[in-house]
Image (cartoon, rainbow over all chains, first blue to last red; front, side, top):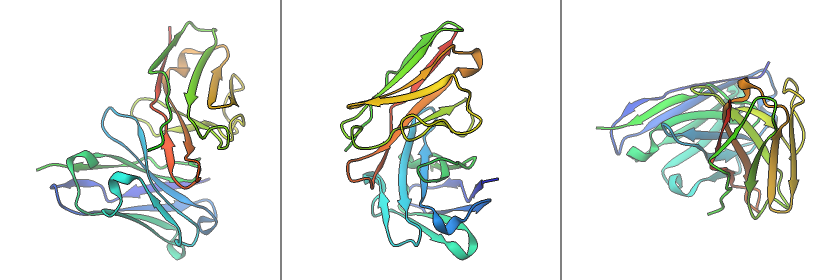
Length: 114
Length: 108
C-alpha cells in the first residue's frame, strides 16, 4: 500500500524558515517524480514544485521560486521542501504527492503569522 | 502563467448526470486528471490520462477530452458524490503543474 506521511509543519513568523519532510513507503520511491501541492485555508489546490527521480530536475511555481527548494533522499525514501523567507500568503496545508499526482499524503499545516 | 478554468459550482438531483468542465489551452496535447476532495480530507484521484478510472472508483465516473476542454461526468450522481472537484494538467512544456479553479458539486 502506497503511503506518504508529511511532517514539519507549524507556526513560523514572516521571514522565517521551515523544512517539510515526507516519508514514502509501499512503492519504489527512486523510480518516481514527486511533488508538493498546497492548499490555503478555504482555497483551491495549488501545485508548488516537482522533482525528478534523481533530483537533477526541479521545477517551481513562480511565487516560490528562489525561496523554496525541493529535494529528495532516495536512500531514505524521503522528500523535502525547504521554505525560506516565508510570507503570510504561504499559509496552507502542504501535501506530498507522487506525480502525476496520483497518491497524496494527509498534509501538514504551515501557518505564517506574527 | 497557465490557467485551467472550471465552473465554480454544479448542482444536480440524485440520479441525474453532473458534468464538470475544465478549459485550458494546452489540453489538446496534455492529459487531464481529476480529483475529488471532501471537506477536510486529502484529494483522491478519480480520473487519469483524460478518461482512465483508478481501481476503486465507481463506474459512474467517466472522463473525456476534446480540444481545449476536458470533462468529468458523474452519471447517476449520488449524495455521497457531493465534494469539491479539481482538474489538473501541465503547461505545454510538461514541467509546470497547474490545478483548475475547482468546482463544488451539490447533489440534492
